[in-house]
Length: 407
Image (cartoon, rainbow, N blue to C red):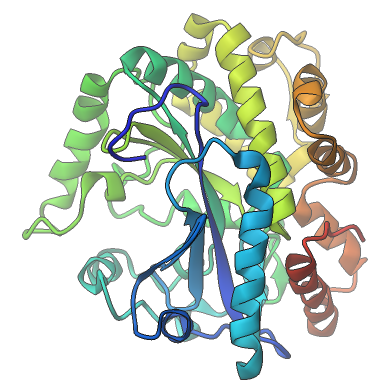
């Protein structure tokens, strides 16, 4: 969202990540450079493909698809992304490869299989690897959707940041899609976030408590987040290679270089139709919270208290129990309810502003559970490698067909 400044919810930017795998055994294929070369005719790290652009990521088996700049037309993004996914699968098919969705590969062993991107920006990735050792699930076995929301000035940043902070803890109940690591069910609905919160423990200033601090102006953000980050990274980055925006790893990060807040805790789903329905839902809920929520009450919540909720939700998903003051942020009584019930309440408030198709998708998620819950249900207590393999083959088919995964 560079150059032009936009007002709240005027546009959105969407990024989706997918992994290259073998079509038969689903093993990760670290050949995104070959994919980009096949498409472009020569090696490049970025390809402009109309409404959508393609690029590399930290590891060589993950490709990122993103809107080619901010867009006001998020209703049609599902089809734009689908067209690009199908084009990539056509390029990969002669090699016996395809794209695989979900936020984590069910069999990948990062210690043995991680291959970093070796081309453009390699000096950045190599330095990250030197500091943190990126051959772990929190680094090399992660696929997510990033949503970028604009703000025009400090007043809009205050409103948007306040609303996003209180919503972050419960988002994984909708979006978790990473229940399995290395062939084993982890016990977390969102295993990606379970490792995400600790994968930069060497320099805790980078991730903080995942939920951003109570900061509502650019000046305070510089002082409370960026300055400590710059100070903490200096002993590791004497040449100043790493950018402060790149280093900030909270669950939502302020990008003052593009006047946007980027949400980073959303697991990738089974197909773009579902990703974009969730994006639409979150946009409408955030609009509702900024229009009708009590700003000062939202701002008062400390990140430690919000993190406690987040930490429970990444483990138990939509079945997490909520009670107390947090519910009053959404005009609900303080009696005990499930996170699913809170999302249902929000859905009732804004569903009439969504397309019928997106309403139907969100209704199914709320009824049947997040993708992690549906994956576990499909496995039906048979956690053998053969059965996991079958379920994830079905998920890969869902991606190409733009179809919900309903066991």
